[in-house]
Length: 245
Ligand code: SF4
Image (cartoon, rainbow, N blue to C red):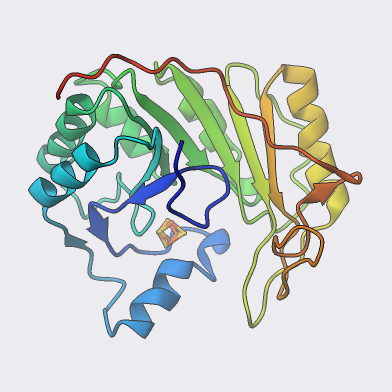
């Protein structure tokens, strides 16, 4: 499998839109806002990118399986119509050899969308959570019938306490990385989530401790080790047959 991104838990990223609006405190240092400013783009005015071009791009990626979708926006943002989101889902279905990793903070809107159509088999549906007050998203996610459900705890900005991950296949954990003011994550907060994963039989992926600097031992922000060890687990998935030549 090839790799075309610095994001540790995927192989490639594909943006179908660009722009978003902040919804919680974990969004404070969103990298899309920083990148938009560098490119002179207003990040609060989401734009839709050319879907046909993206379709061709996916067809060329024969050596990549996992694709993180919409890393520069939120698929279920209120600024995108359900018609458009449906077109994106048809794109996912045209590429059954890919596993699309779709993360959203608007899981309530995802629930509404999936009342009308099933989650494609090759879409991993996830929600992002960085603080206690947003843990309710896990319960919303559990109500959606997706083959793989996952939670990205990133950036973790406080101790999340105890909660259930039963029915969830995968958890990614990371602290905030930012050149200016990263909010620190204590290793014990990450360890607490790891123990929940162990108890609830959830694949656990520890991305980084976070901070301003990359670690000399592993090149991750802060460090990629927890308890002196690397945790890079994935959920089990099947690659479907190619539908195109
Ligand atoms: S929801 Fe995601 S993309 Fe949107 S502002 Fe928050 S972190 Fe950024």
